[in-house]
Amino acid sequence: MLKLYDMPLSGNCQKVRLMLSILGIEYEKVPVNLMEGEQKKPEYLAINPLGKVPAIDDDGYQLWDSQAILVYLATKYGSTDWYPDDAEGRADVQKWLALAANEMFHGPAIARALIIFKRPGDHDKAKAAAEATLAVVNGWLENHEWLACGRPTIADIAVYPYAALVWEGHVDMSAYPAMNAWIKRVEALPGFEGMKNMPRPE
Amino acid sequence: MLKLYDMPLSGNCQKVRLMLSILGIEYEKVPVNLMEGEQKKPEYLAINPLGKVPAIDDDGYQLWDSQAILVYLATKYGSTDWYPDDAEGRADVQKWLALAANEMFHGPAIARALIIFKRPGDHDKAKAAAEATLAVVNGWLENHEWLACGRPTIADIAVYPYAALVWEGHVDMSAYPAMNAWIKRVEALPGFEGMKNMPRPE
Image 1 (cartoon, one colour):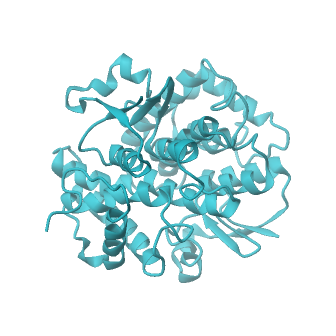
Image 2 (cartoon, chains in turn brown, red):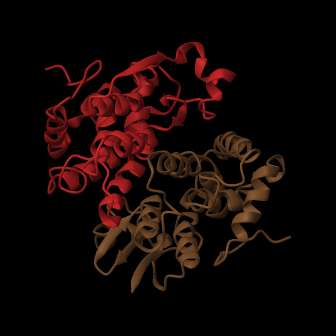
């Protein structure tokens, strides 16, 4: 059975849990205790040398990085609906995967981590970066129902968790109505499973 | 003809220029003057709402993000040698694309940008992040000739530029011999074209 090296409050792990639940794949969670530094121990670094969650082990095939895992799951267990085969569709998905790896992390995810994990760091800077990124995504969603290809793809799965959780980082989401509507569309996908505060409590 | 929205000293643009030269694709460079803020003007934001280079326009198809452009070029003009079709190969490439978008940027690229563009920021922090990332990549390359699939792929093209240029950011590369050997392998690829200080002057 597929193993997910997991941390319950991680938005990066949630990308993978969400894809697994939508695709209906059974899996086993292997908790990695970040508070105790388990991710920096040799046994885990052998799985992910970056010392981060998530990672997977699928019958011996090991893989790290949440975006890479989405590509893997969509290709192996999903369909080209989730990750297209044509150059333009694939690239349109890919640009949002890069945004999920970079801008959605160094903005929304960090703003949240500084608050909920009480990490040291400059919250004002992370909040400003988050707002700049959210404005771009919101602008796109003003004219598009989904991030790429006119349908749900792994692009939406990759960007969604830190968008849905950024309010925990004290970023006001009321400025991004198109994004809020898209968040609800993602949460209405068949097989959707959330985590703590997902969907956001009323 | 394919247009590349370009800045000569950008390592992200170099990823695209290198792929284009290796694939033998003719293209036109459209300079974007970052010093004068052209990337934040409405005409350019219509092409890339993040206000960053590179972006491309291929006969009307517009795309931003250097990693996404590599996926596009490999899929449209390359072969599955550069970006595989099988789940494991594709995902193995993808994890390095994510590292190129995130860790190679918020480390090597920033350390260099703070020096050569005299940007404000914490160079010690960027240098430490760069060294942590380079150690991981070097560790992988101690046992592998290429980043993924046992052959050159877009993973190498995506990670190479900021690895080859990080010395400009005052990061000592002598600690990463496996990476230095890999840099030379990339530079020996047929069609390789460099930029300023690439290959590194003796």
